[in-house]
Image 1 (cartoon, rainbow, N blue to C red):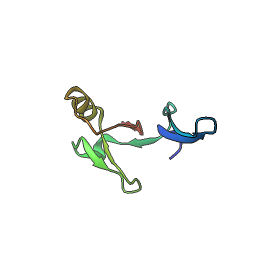
Image 2 (tube, rainbow, N blue to C red):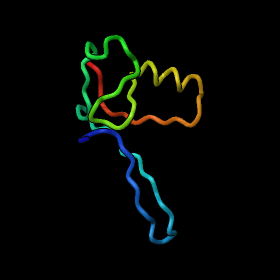
Image 3 (cartoon, one colour):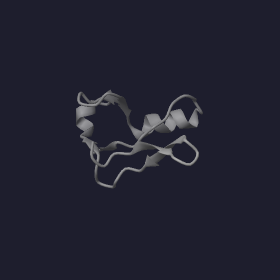
Image 4 (tube, helix red, strand yellow):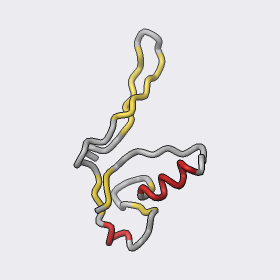
Length: 79
């Protein structure tokens, strides 16, 4: 997807270690989902994408609860 937050990887030739770099979402780009399509759901899937998606409310709850083994990438917006 164009403009979404993603992780790029490369090998540091000097240290021979794999380096992961987080690339932020470009404003105005990425996935845009109309809220009415969610029908009140805060967790959802987009058929063309291989991962689960959630609204800011779910992300904020998970972060506030300090759950582990979960990460978030900013994919787009609901409108």
